[in-house]
Image (cartoon, rainbow, N blue to C red; front, side, top):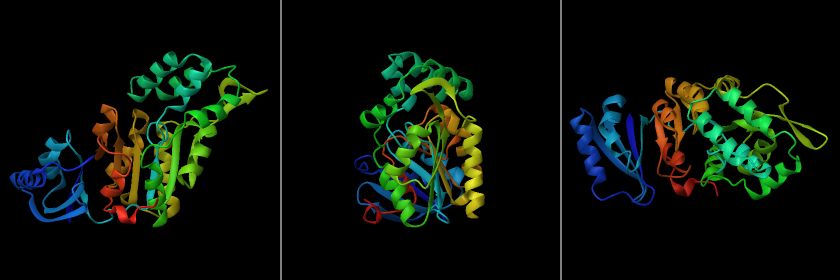
Length: 296
């Protein structure tokens, strides 16, 4: 059965549930049952009708709450594939390294354009890494210690999904120097990222292996599902920028969950669920998981 979930950052506005039911009915979707996932915060509304009609009906609420419309079958996912920077952690690691090198504004401007889809990701990455040539490699550990923090809800999401047997993959256009520690901190089982070349204790300004880009992210999603023997309906892919679009579009096309986390506009258009108001625990509500079942 189709299901609509409304997730508020604090509390659902008075009347929004009845308003949503009215909107569904106006779009030839018949509301059936209403169940709280968290009293006053997140609610499921089951209905009869087409997903596309329901999405059109409730799009009006997206500036107030996070809204996901999906089939209840296979709602709980067995594969999580996630971006790292600005998704599982609060920063863009290359921008923070640039800060240690004294060139953050220059590199951050390139990062933002790349994430918005205005620049080729691979070329933009190589250009930014080249600007870091000569940086003391010890700055990586300092950056990890001082700057890298988990996104609110990240560990709860990953460890809760792992507890029911889901496989969690961290795939990043960033660097293994960061993804390894972040994966260990949050509970990811598998990691894919770029490798910074270091010689005599300093960054050379080059990468030491093939670039992990948008196409790679999509391939990682496909390969992980194939290895696990899963249909992509059982996958949840999440990211924030343009280089996450192919993997998210792949999940969407297979009727899985393709999520834009506080996404840039182009990514939001490709996703079938965008988290704009909540932290990453919204992805647990989207899977029908109540807070008393979350890992802490």
